[in-house]
Length: 65
Image 1 (cartoon, one colour):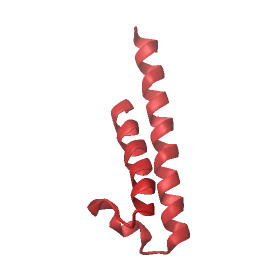
Image 2 (spheres, rainbow, N blue to C red):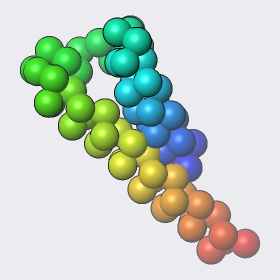
Image 3 (spheres, helix red, strand yellow):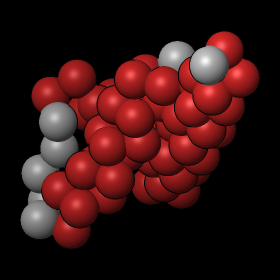
Image 4 (cartoon, helix red, strand yellow):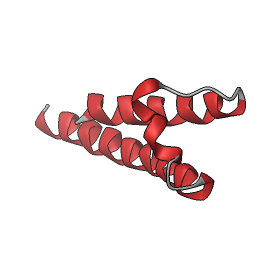
């Protein structure tokens, strides 16, 4: 879960950065179909969910040691 969270957060942040250069990842082009506000909500949600998964995975690793 730690890796999945890290990738989600990285792609969310990357999507925000690319948005300002009027570009987008090919597999994330669909997020602006429903409007700009929904696109921003999805980007921020990706970062938040990624952070949660990252820290849950990190806590499980330290609990098993």
